[in-house]
Amino acid sequence: MRYNIADFVNGDSVNEFFVIKAADVKTGKTGKHYLAVDLSDATGIVSGKKWDLYPNERDFVYGLKAGDIVKISGKVTEFAGTPQLNIEAIRAVSSEEPIERSELYKTAPEPSEDMYQWIIGRINAFEDEDLKKLCLSFYEDNREKLMYYPAAMRNHHAEYGGLLYHVKRMMMMGERACEVYTNLSKDLVLAGVALHDIEKLNEILSDENGMSPGYTTKGQLLGHLTMGAIVIDGRCRELGIPEEKALMLEHMSISHHYEPDFGSPKKPLFPEAELLHYLDMMDAKMFDFEDTLSNVKPGEFSDKVFQLDNRKLYKRTF
Ligand SMILES: [Fe+2]
Ligand SMILES: [Fe+2]
Image (cartoon, rainbow, N blue to C red; front, side, top):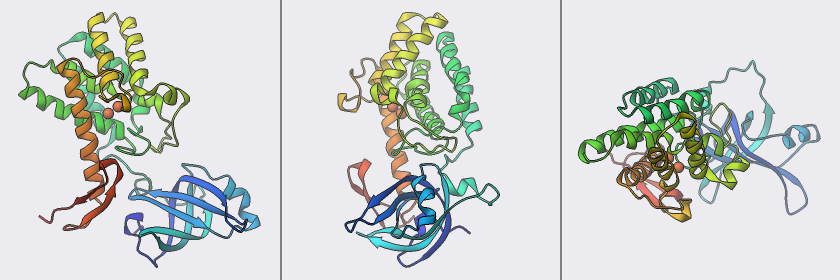
């Protein structure tokens, strides 16, 4: 049984595999070099320090980068109430060592292939042939990356298959919303959901385990809302999609974050675009609640959650 980050208790000894999230060799007050790392597994992230660096491990330590798997032994300590790892030894991992991928990487709760097929099934059920053709072309072209891509570098759905999981749950909610708000075009809502974050595939970087080391240059300069509008525009021209539908989907891409401060130059100007924003928010927030409470005991409160306005969440006992 693996000793998970979520179970770290002050004073415990640890001897486990971890994935490097970030690594840096820093200089202490006395001029001594030490290693500062953020380590992750499927259950969380913990900071670690190795205070003594020996000459024979210098090259290895300086070469560490996000995504590397390492074996670490050390002791759990506490810093400002948060567990930290005091690293005694760190080493590279050979390809023969028995490592369970699912123990090391956060993964969406459903297999990627199933989620992908579910989404394709919904798109195939569109009555609007233009929207169907457009969405299918994006999903077929990007199939390989969609299998592992997270929906974010940190924050919500930063996990293997996270983008598909985000889209699937938004589509499920979107379908139900259309049963209540019957004047909406369901195909437009679902097409907006399918495409709203598609350019995250080119905005953020990700390895094949869904670990993102950062953003692309294009992602930093334009962001997935603008990038989305550009690729939708290009693809609609190629496929001969009528201009009104193309413009409405481009608008849904640029308006789905709602506020200029979050990257939207326009607020939603038709109801399907307004709904898209709420579906997006709802799924992101519910993910953050579920994710936080998964590490909290019943009847207790979580630590402050930054992305939920520093609220401390309560976990029910029943
Ligand atoms: Fe987005
Ligand atoms: Fe989103």
